[in-house]
Length: 300
Length: 286
Image 1: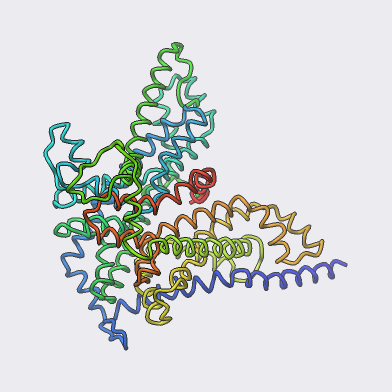
Image 2: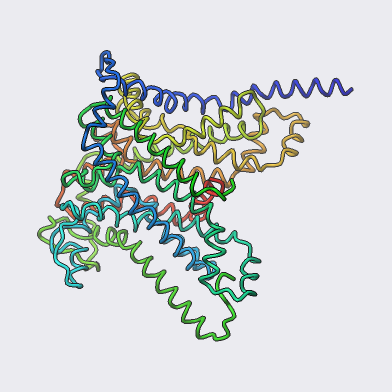
């Protein structure tokens, strides 16, 4: 009896494994064709001088050319500056807003959540078109007019190299916090009430509660948002491409944009592939460092 | 919430505190909404060159001339919306179907290599898209020679690893007993998938459908790379072309931006719950 049961069980598992493979078949084919193969291919292309009919192997030349290229380092520098200016500020803003929303009634919470999330629903192209006009360099431009109330003179926001980067950063501050606010809120609601009660018995103030309870409890969330934020920021391409085109004087050329230009403007596929792999390496390294130094007490 | 001290004793203190909180939140909300408000309001202006007008933050009149101007720019302006719809809908349907199938297999069916395959998929999510874009472009344009077709826009996104991950996470929480019962009753895996897994996963699949549709509708980069005639472009690519061709026509540009964003706004306001759920669902266990 037991043996029969065992046999049928085995047969069932065997039979099911066929279904297993069938169910993942399409996903695997898509993955192999459009992710795995391109990654392998990127490695190969990065060692080649690409030509439509038969590429030539050039060894490490693409990598060496990139490392000797001042523009490449400038774009890396720009990307790092952009990341430092956007990600921590956006995290802090989202955290503060989430803390402020928590005491409100559920209905109000939902309204604010929806409002803050709204820019994330609009397409990046639409937002870039709008911001382009907000930054209109004429005296009649919206931002210039608002600031003239405070006695500031006209600024050519996107056209001068001292303000172009800041303009992209400001845009990021005001249009990409929705997701992190909602994630922070969900995490805040997950904190056990008893912690607060205990703290209250000890006479802890609001600030102390935030510092000793909320911030430690939200550490995994912060780490998650930080890592994903940095990864996203390092790949940033669209806003720079649509708003400034990397200018003026390459003040807003980020790695993502440089790779795009090399690939689809100059058709230097080899160099673009080499640079994209360097970028992947940098991102992996930074993510690793973040997990190593910030993730010590975080459990997954 | 007990994060805030509720019994300070004086209701005045509480009330002023709440008032200050509201003011801060509303100011921040206004700053967030301002670009969208500006876009909507300005789109109702007349289609004149920017030099001849000054922007106003309050509508003096409502005219749809700028929308007309946008649609008259190209014979294919309406087609752009249709193209976006075709691409986004196809990507959405295939993702919901294939990602849920794969997610079910990865969470509930035992087969050799399951763990290895799944971790390969997870690791691949870390690869920046810049790495794959050049080879993908060569593959689609030079090898398959399907440039400027719907297939080229749809096929690379047929099923994403993120969606498989989402489906697997959710389906992992469906109790095994139900599936075993179904098996004893004589269901094969296909029947289990259709009759048990799909109905139980409705919510997560709705979230997946909406987020996938939105992402596909809003995507600019890939359609921009693989299309080269006006009639095949999506609305995002079309809007970009319109902007570069009419750099001084302020109101029509805003009308175009509104047209590209409005469908998502409508979708968002009618299905808000799923959108907001979708944000947290993938983040809970990063």
